[in-house]
Amino acid sequence: MSFRMPDGITPVNAKEAFEDTSEIEVKSSLPRWICLRVAPNLELKERVVRFFRGQMATLSPDLCEKLSMALDELLSNAIEHGCKVEPKCAFEITYIRTARMILLQVRDAGPGFSMSEIQHAAVNNPPEDPLRHAEWRSRMGMRPGGFGILLVKQIADELIYNEAGNEVVLVKYL
Image 1 (tube, one colour):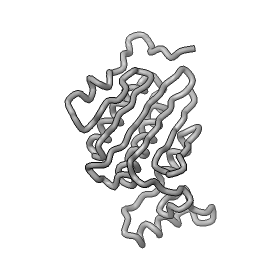
Image 2 (image 1 turned 90 degrees about the vertical axis):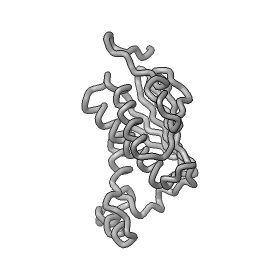
Image 3 (image 1 turned 135 degrees about the vertical axis):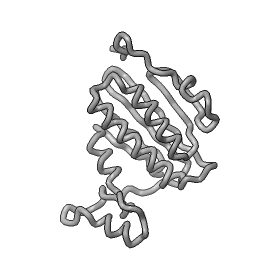
């Protein structure tokens, strides 16, 4: 079974969507396989998320919004923690869509991390202390937050990090 767009819905071509910026390189623009290399810029991230929201417009509005939120979080992490907003760094996003699933893969050029060592994230809080990370973030002078990966885990059917911790794959079954 192959994925087919419903009648009347035409996805925007990635090359056309990003032809006006050199900070986004389109590596693949097939409707079912899109790959972008993007400079670590929050404004570009918002544009990329809007683009992929459009690619997922045939999903239920709720699922489209949840996947867009998950993508936004993964790209924010790639920019803030992976690339550390370093202009020479970049992240890559791959979107693959079949009749049965959507795969989002985000890879940044940063050194990566160990999931068990990120004390600033709620995903590592013990059940008896669900806000431990908030105290840690405050002590370290970090902005409030730290719920992103926990949120993404609730949306994804599978969330897999590579060994280095600088690449993540989100799978959502349809």
